[in-house]
Length: 77
Length: 494
Image (cartoon, rainbow over all chains, first blue to last red; front, side, top):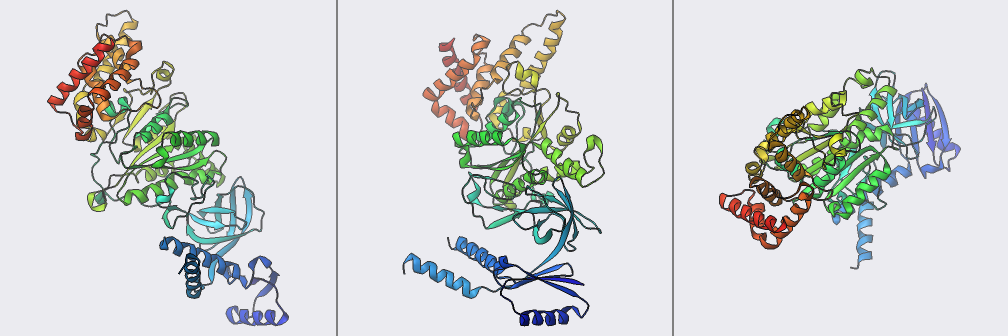
């Protein structure tokens, strides 16, 4: 299986090792992982594996929070 | 606590209570792209009509699901390159709804096109089932258009679907716009959906609505000729979704689809690009179902369901007055009647150029206001008789007085653009015709005579007009008073 991980810098060797270990627990040993640096994520990472995206990026968190605040502010009005 | 502290407190509370849930979505990769249609490999869990995110504000609509992948039609302009990531959003095409959309111009995705922000927090799916039979009521409330020819001879009821059909440049849009303008002060919310029209024409229509204060109760959903075919395809569904929000809130709503010929063409484009089998005139096999499921969403809801209504005016453009072409016949058979606009009448100076003989309203008779029903009972027959006499006269036959009567009636039905009549005014014109008050007015001065007569009535007999308007009926006493008044006013004119 091919797995792509997009991550926001900075990241050191320990981050990659931890990530590989986590992926082995989730997907077993048979996978190829590619790490791609992506500053637009602002923080965190996104994993593309087996046709699914697992989005743990700071950008998505902020987008969600912003949408939630906008919705709540409408209700306050 | 001042406002700044309140805002700070509100934000702190929201941030502290925020719980992040990782976003999990299906993804795939673009394999090919051409003419606004892309094929994506992967995307295993997407649903039909799901919005697909290609990043950089590029979106598409999942349209064709197969084992090999997903056919996606693009909702945004621009191109994609193979290998581009496509994300399923889990979000079925919908539109933001709410009172804030009244007076606004939006696209089928709910994005404002008039340069002002629009914030809506409720959504309705573009596609949703039509009201069930048990949720409906019979169409029995009048929907006045302010156009004498329609209100007297092709009466429309709230919840009806009345097609406006005719060649280009014959005044189809003008009829729809007059009907919108006539809803001022009647509590009806109007939706004008433009599909595949020129952007300049859309601007002109919006300005016309603004100038007549009709934008106070109208919003426009626009997909112009330069928009992708998928956006044009979505436009009437999105507009109907928004209109349904108001209908299910208990409001009377009117919607104009201008026009469904271009909508059918947009759907044909998409279908051909997706390599779906084509049928008559290269339209796909489900083109009838496309329009029937759209127009079935117009209804008069029962009182238990709020009593709201959605009255639809789809517009179809014909080529060389051929109503037997595929799309016109489809929509004619779906709707509850049609207003046929004729090129020859238009060129002959009859405005609106409604051919009453070919026009029909299948349900509106039950909803017609009583005063108009009483006064317009035999008008269609009189007009038909005149047409027969016209044919007879071509061979030198003696036509008697029918031709003169018919010509007078035709002149009465000429209504300048932007002139709309109230029900009482329509009753006054018909009463004047019935009692022969127009017989001494030259045909070329009928329009002036009507204007003068109505002005005099408003000045001297306002209470009588208001009484007829408010009651929705005309008693024998009121009819006598009205006839007396119109005779008096027209006598001073002749």
